[in-house]
Image (cartoon, rainbow, N blue to C red; front, side, top):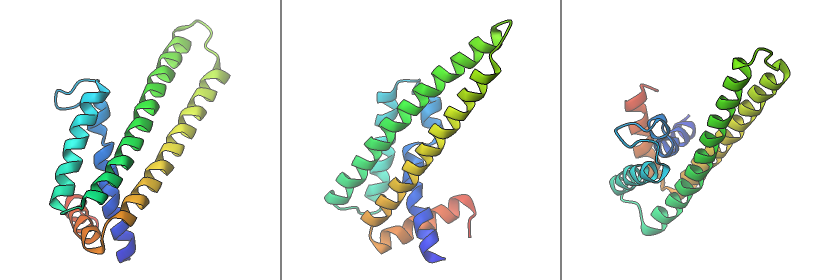
Amino acid sequence: MMKKLAIAGSAVLAVVLLSGFAFRGGHGWGHNPERIKQMVTWRLNDKLEDLDATDAQRQSINAVKDRLFDDGVKLMEEQHGAREEAFTQLASDTPDAQKLHALVDARIDAMRAFAHKMTDAALEVHGTLTPEQRKELATEFRERTGVK
């Protein structure tokens, strides 16, 4: 049980990296991926400061953040393209049902693949942190989410 909570706690970092507000451009950051990445980096570095992370931990975890962020930006760009294609199909007098269903399947597959990358990233971060740091994250995660 504690191991599951520790993994969930370290997943907080992955969630911070790619939280929904980032890709929606919340807090006045617009849709500029570099500005969003800067904000995510600041938040992550604040969390690593709170955890008293070593330089090696910071470097490793920031590399995970960069990799996930780049994959997330690509996923969102593909999502926008798929949405445009769906609107084009639905605006036509004869939408292609097969094409629309294939589009849905492709987006689900892409989201599933990204979710697995996020899980692998959370496990990588988990392995980078000390047991004390994982416990601190797990405690924070439980407090924020109400998970027991």
